[in-house]
Image (tube, rainbow, N blue to C red):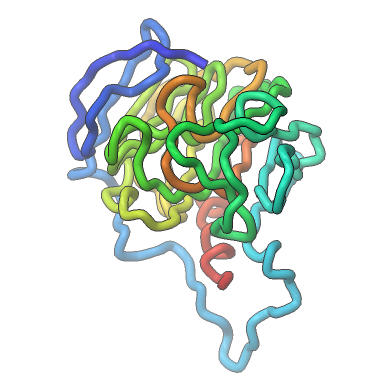
Amino acid sequence: MRVVVLAFVLAGCAVDRPLPGVGTGVVVQAGDLATAPFDLATAPFDLSLPPGAAPDLTTPPSACGQLAADAHTLALYHFDEAAGQTLADSSGNGRDATLGQTSAVEPEDPTHAPGRLGGGLHFDGNQVAHASASIAWPSGQFTAEAWVRYLGSDEGPFGTAMIFDADDGELAAQGTCILWTLGAQGRMGGPPAFSDGQWHSIALTSDGAQVLVYSDGVQVDATQVATTIGPSAGYLFGGQLSLAHLIGDLDEIRLSDVARTPSEIAAAYAAALACP
């Protein structure tokens, strides 16, 4: 987890500090929300039921709308545990995570709390969860997905709050921005309503030549840039070890070794939106 600061100017995002954790030589590109090719007023999916159809009440509430594991899923966390230190990896790959920086009960442990879909984790601005298992993206493709309720960070109401932090890739929130770094590239951009205190679905994908950012099932940023992401000896949720800590909540984190398609991202959001 890197702690090097690179200053730059961003158009369209409310920020109070530069992107954290980017390494020497990182190229950071500023997003421009004024010209972003998206329309948040319309969604690319239809949530209506067919005439006369009844909603499906057979799915247990805790499973409604949750992300599923497939052959490309490297790790998947529902955060449905009611207690305990272990956060189960539902991908079947054995990458269980742990509350706090160690396996012991400590002040740095986030708390089990209601999530967007079932259980979730609440972070108070000084807490992290960690996975010590190694992870790699051999195909060079990458997707990180999460449900986030951003209330601020330990750096202030518009401070940086890390969602996912690995040795060579990061996804974070900062005020009205979504931040990412993949290898030697980084960018800030994102939806203008992200800091409204509500739950939002966030996704970051890279196919090695293009990086896309999604919020609530809709693409909100695109960067045509070659990216690589190296293996990581472990990763964190909710902050770095000494900075960029989230005040808010996380739920439904899925890490994949493929660039999830726009239709997959939209369908996942639609499924969650149909849940109570």
